[in-house]
Image (cartoon, rainbow, N blue to C red; front, side, top):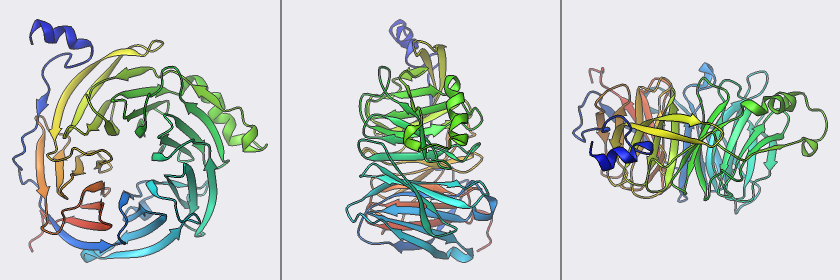
Length: 380
């Protein structure tokens, strides 16, 4: 590392140069296309498997236009439609969807989009359970706290995150203000084991880590609140504990990998890096970029990657309808395989990787859903 690069150590490559993965597929896995569905002509922006309940590991949900559709992956590549919901507002365009559940474990769907309203749907009763109104603009992502699935966080174009209690309908915290994002927030994620930590990223090119440790009493109070949700003393979290400019362009997807962070920008790559928080009060710290996973022709924003439950692989589509399957437990990074089909040429907005990584779904700008199944160990 040169002296000039060393000076930049506080924001980039702290310890050594990051290891860049080769785009030559190792062919460690072989996936075969087993189904293609066409929902309509409207873009499908999100597709997500249910990882919260082992009874529903093969169930997934998609959103496109004002429609939310629930499917089940069956043997032999079959995809069965289970439920479909059409929002009462025909001008609604959902951008994001996820899974949560009731007290007794009944599956709920959470979705948001252009209107800034979050819909909670009781999939068991096939009815709308709650609607959350609060964001001042469209919602780009919703995520569920898997350790406490009643907690859902939303990321918005209004430059804020909001933490909600789906049981009581309360907006507990709003992450916005002096140290907040300065443009659209495109992605957010709960830490997998530390219930206090959240990371977010967006069009201001930054990734931020937030802590709810000082606000736990409000989280707890939200579960026992009996008055109107609008009377709850919602708190503002104005400063993150950490801010990093790891990328030089829009950052449209971020996920925790243990205490490390995976983040994707429109610069054709996903980075794996370690946030080193030095001073929580000022939000300063360092970045150690460990690995880079190239994704060619992935230069438009709002393309999201996904991982299997155990984070063995990350799958991501690109602008030309191709899917890259990267091994996450390898150093240097290994491209397990690249998936392509002559008819898959539309931008892939999101992938969904099944619990064990044996099925990969992609949802596309042209309204199609594609299913790929692992046949690595198959004799056919």
